[in-house]
Image (cartoon, rainbow, N blue to C red; front, side):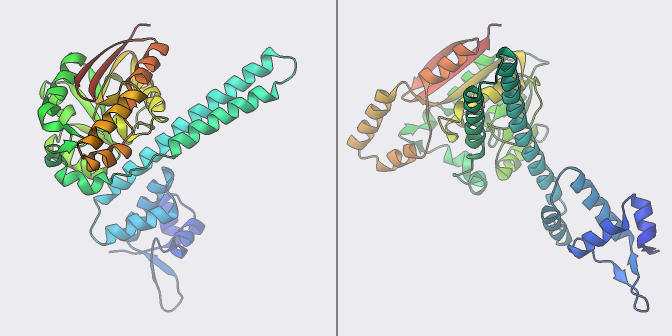
Length: 354
């Protein structure tokens, strides 16, 4: 195989020799050097590695991240590049959502300046603080439940009790009811957030409905793909959905909404609305409380029954308050219907009215 000098490979790949030497210094490439003059000689494999580096840098990956990918590829894990690209896409969408919020805040500040002869600094400060809280709320999300580790056994875990609620009795029922309420039509496209292993999305897919699944767990998505190989799946979460605006006819989620905090839940609803077409509808199936008193009564009953494990589980979940969810929909011009299935399990369906 013919080897190239640095000038030749730089010209071939349209990259500077200085950049090539930088990547060599960082350990991303290791060209052979001639013994007599120490000139660098590059093989086709080196060219391929440089092309990989250039491509990954173009989508915003750091040198450190690229080195990790290349090291894994050296060990035969070339398929992992897809995972890292998905991570990068999710990170870029998260930043994009944050930038959109910043632009909204700037527009509001400009409007204040135009309305008044002198800038209202206190009002501008209030807006900036609100924007800061939203950013911190988004950034505070993390996977405290380690779904990657649980992915292989997740479907079998569904046959266990969930905070005092026996999923076996109602799980299939609520998934079927979700599909029935959404009533999808051929040609529509839906999004399942927190899709997990695809149990809800698969029901839509089986009816010939195009649906995509988003989940923050790589391993959950791997299980979903093994069950539904034709289904589109992406890494992402409730607070930064990896899609541009107005893409879907409906959004669904089942037994996942409680994995974000009560403070984050309105942001998640905003994200759902963002990716929906103007007439797009939302269906949330999850455990919810009717009120603070309802929560206290439920926990008291569990204590009387000696269900300490269930109480511990509830303390680590963030079940929404049904009135708060319904209020958000009302404030955002949706009409809703909801149904209590059993104990804390509810289904909420919302359709925009304007």
